[in-house]
Length: 215
Image (cartoon, rainbow, N blue to C red; front, side, top):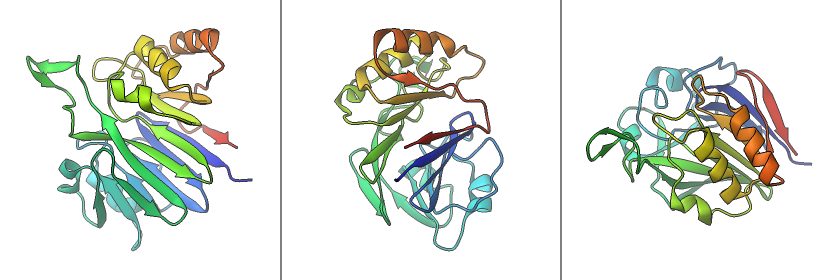
């Protein structure tokens, strides 16, 4: 039976092992013992697009999938995607989706994450889909997502959804499982209680270095 081993490395960083491939998403925090088959980068901010960390996990055939603003910072086999685009590596399909702020601004009219500059990712293999939301508010496009098995949702507030908004996103997306990320020092148990009280969605609270297996 196909399974995803999803290891939270801290912040928005994950290692996902599936179909004999190693996928890293936003490699920044944590320890990186394995070389990457696929690297997914959501946007160009330093705590998501870290060229020095990416360089250390590359093999000669590693595929880097990212938006245009990050592609300018990294070297290698880079595939630039925009929302709606797809890339296939072996059995794995990666679809880019929207990730942006519409209610969080660094200055008037200047969101921390403008629409079109960053991405979320749908990682699909063997009929199962993992959604990494990137840095984002609870945006309307999330309500269009279907058949998500595992959603990795930011919940720390300030630059992304806070726990209350992440709970609303989880209730709208209706994945089987949610793992909060990009948490800062917030308390994700707030999100867990709301989501599990109002739905059949399971919320798993990982500590950095812990792994969840999606079967």
